[in-house]
Length: 323
Image (cartoon, rainbow, N blue to C red; front, side, top):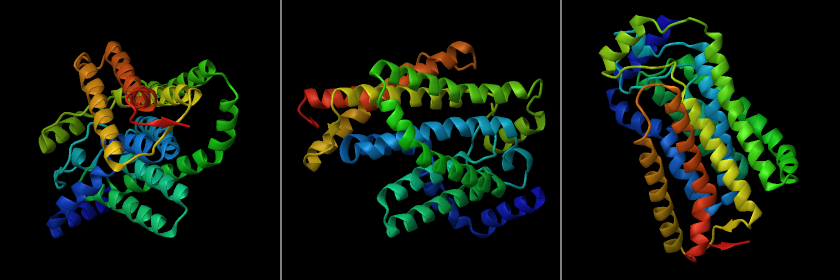
């Protein structure tokens, strides 16, 4: 079916050139950076419970997606076809689409939480548009997007079914044990991707894929690098552990005037950026063990700041109150 899928991508790119700008926009709505901007806003300013649920779910979904990509180890369209224009550049494998999977889990949980028909309609529309945008940009085959939607739905349904009983069980533990559970969960996410990589044995990325990607996008690929998986597991640990400690001392109430909420967000997201980019300066570019450890620590520190550090500072500065 590769030829048929490439023909579809070409049709989208050649006959509807005006789609590039909206495709870039909707693709951004599936980017991890978008989630990292929105989840803190919800957690600090509007709905801490929904922000917590989204943070945990997106960490789980991201870790699973990285493992699935390595397990399938399939190329992106512009890696293998000179007929496809690379309107984006991504170094990881193609199937399943992380954007499509993330859109289902993120917007799906928002719709499930809101329980309103119009929210569901908007969520379905955004999920569809994010997926189509990935095909129009030439960075995914249609089957990649369909697989992403399918895996995203399974992960979302599993999360909704298990969060109640698992959450009640974890709530009976001490804070120290809750942190240990969060750490064990993050290691499990990293181990899944590591196991998928080990299962490949001596398989190597075909030279034609690397050459095609570099020729058509100008960017090298490194799909066997596990730093994205380490990032997802680190964010999960930091966010979950911080939320456990935050809940123990009394959860922050996301109330107050709009100006106060905006001040919270502006201050909190600025410090998040300092943590992320500051520690990032210490991470070597080569995929070595030290780089993975530092990447994990960077992600964990950023996650812990969002769920624990920032609310503590907000309370100290009288920018928030506790329940």
